[in-house]
Figure 1: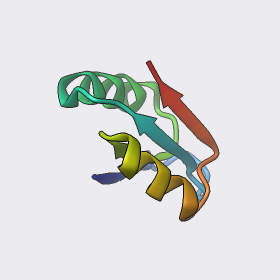
Figure 2 (figure 1 turned 60 degrees about the vertical axis):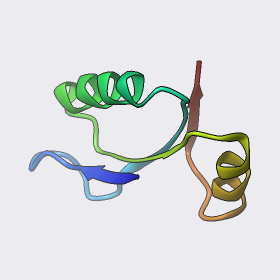
Figure 3 (figure 1 turned 180 degrees about the horizontal axis):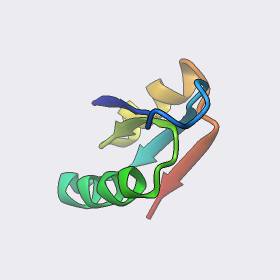
Figure 4 (figure 1 turned 30 degrees about the vertical axis):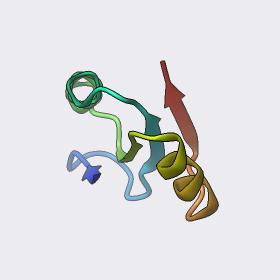
Length: 67
């Protein structure tokens, strides 16, 4: 899953976030709070260790978030 969120008054370059999360409900809660904050971000997620390793080898994330 990949989402880009950008309020009109925020600079064009989004912060790239990679979520290592095994629960889709927790991911949605995090994304909802980030959207409310007005932060300009692009979110990607990995639900398994293999998917996480694959995402890390691709386009780099600015921040990795894991519980």
